Image (tube, rainbow, N blue to C red; front, top):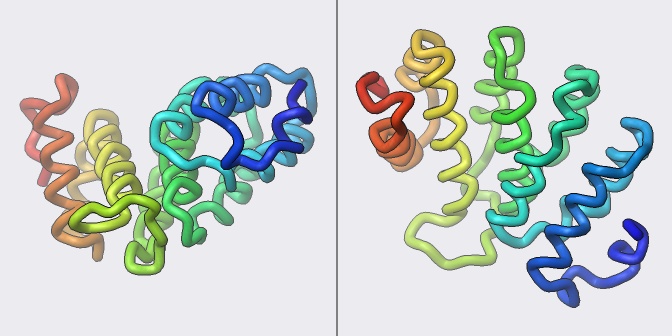
Length: 183
């Protein structure tokens, strides 16, 4: 069933078909390597935040995955120039790599994202909006779990002021960090 989606051009798939394709990848009985091969075909067709985030939230198999291999796999997507490929790497890192051991690696990856090189399919004031918001979401989540480390990172990062403002807003809006200073 998974392969039927791969033969169709992504522009021919509707929202629901994209979601089902992602869920089938997550539910497939296969090896880690086979699943990554399926993601190599799926991630490039992500074209909106809802499908991207739904996939990431339901990829529970990644909890058991080799974190070194997962981190290596995500490197490609962090360096992408496509908005939802970068968001995929950000959200996957937030969901499945965020712990004390991997937090410095995640923060380093955020520093390497070149927002000016990312092509957005949407026209907002500061493209790429969905990457910027993904970074803000990740940082607000990190603040809830690792406030000291997140404060240190945010106060010394080269991330744009715009991203920092989005992060502060996310932190203020979250029940988990409402009473924690974002800086």
